[in-house]
Image (cartoon, rainbow, N blue to C red; front, side):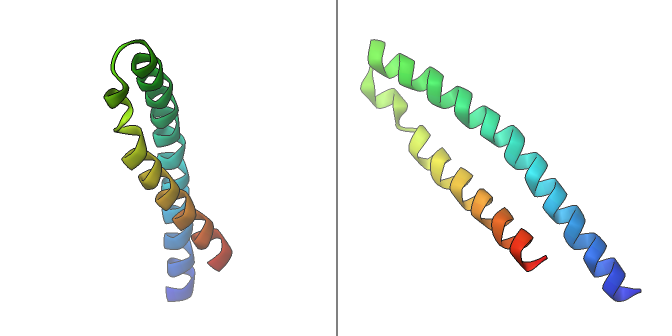
Length: 71
């Protein structure tokens, strides 16, 4: 049963990560559009938070991909 439990736990972790990625991706996309629009109209420095968010998004997405491959 420990193998089945480990498989179940891995499946739950992948499902949670995919769900988180979906919501974070929506937040990231909306933030990117809003901040870019504001940067064009007013202040170019306001777009700076998009860069760290993109690294977080890529890291989480890559981790999910590795989990799928291993599973």
